[in-house]
Length: 210
Image 1 (cartoon, helix red, strand yellow):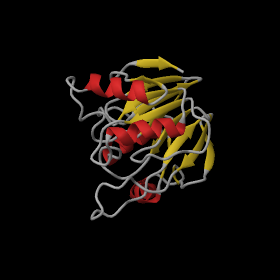
Image 2 (tube, one colour):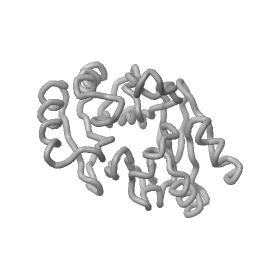
Image 3 (cartoon, helix red, strand yellow):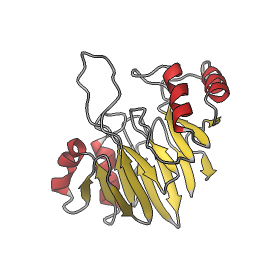
């Protein structure tokens, strides 16, 4: 399986000529979803869900299908009957040869005064876990943890402890659009040294073999 890092929290996985894209939101490239056979969206915040990008991907490939939580599915299902699927915690399904498990229920707390929305994470082929905007522990072995390193709802101590709890073989940074080149080495040093797992950050467009 090949992994291509896109901007912010968007990730592309490719296997046997088929493509899965997670969270082609407004902070990702305009064409981030194009070419996808499978689209997964973790939650409704615009940096993860951008309706125009999803519509473009579904229009470009009539066989492409979307799996997401109800709040997103309701916005797209009427225009794409039979191609938009609602999922929640505990679900498992196969899409274009990818085996996917759904973990998690709620977005991380931003502030107690802000109501929490639904958020789901996706474990792909029992190997790659993308938690969306939450520090969900999937309760399963994880080879590659897509790690949300910087957000209004987390701090680096929580990120480090999250890596320790999941115990992946490696972590790859996501949710990183707000980090500058000045602070990136600090995050790499602290998470890499204290998390207990190999830490990496791919520049957008970079491909890694998993």
